[in-house]
Image 1 (cartoon, one colour):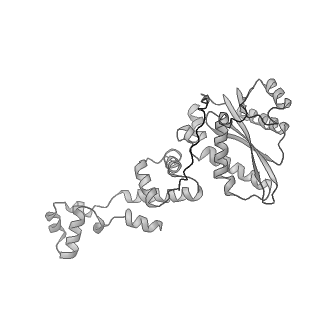
Image 2: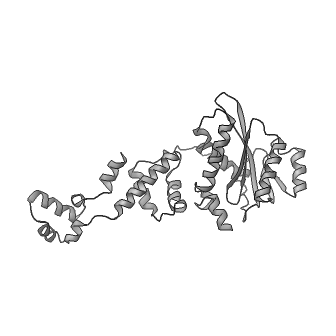
Length: 288
């Protein structure tokens, strides 16, 4: 199907032109007149008649890359595909051109409309201006194919939306949370504050004492207001939608291995709208 679309749309031979060149081609074929005479009749140059668009090879490259991106990332729409071509791969193609090819290939995702619910306008989140100014952490849940539930402990840097770690196990008490945060601090540095909800692990005395000893402020959101922890909640949605919902897991080793691969993909290859279309690592390098 891909080659048919490309052949019909982007590879123009002399008899597949538009406008005056198309009429000249028609007369040459139907009335058996010479190319020079047909060009004189329709007031075009012979060079124009023989001209073949130089964009054909580029369009094929764009089409191949779009098909590859949407095959590897089944939930990506046009926005992420275009940002990946421009910011990650560094290709200078115009968004209108890429979108035209994207539509010709029929790669558009169906958008399911959502019912809008009127809510009280939330207080806007503070936007960090440098790395390690604010981290956010949260838990997620999933299950293996045998029905056993496991937990995922996620930590991100709010500045560039970088996924710092994901700890995976059947049980993740407060001591495991503290150990994971200590490991992050060893190679990443100490954050000014950490934002979280009011889960049992986060309100434990062990975590509060650790924060006091480290000189880190823990910012608890109000109960029942997850939008106050929007950075990590949005990250959780991306992880759920792009990875967890796409796979079946048989054991924790498989989950952990795929988690490492997905974290690398998220930080280095997936454009992030919160970073202006750049990946978290690109945003981090811009701040350096």
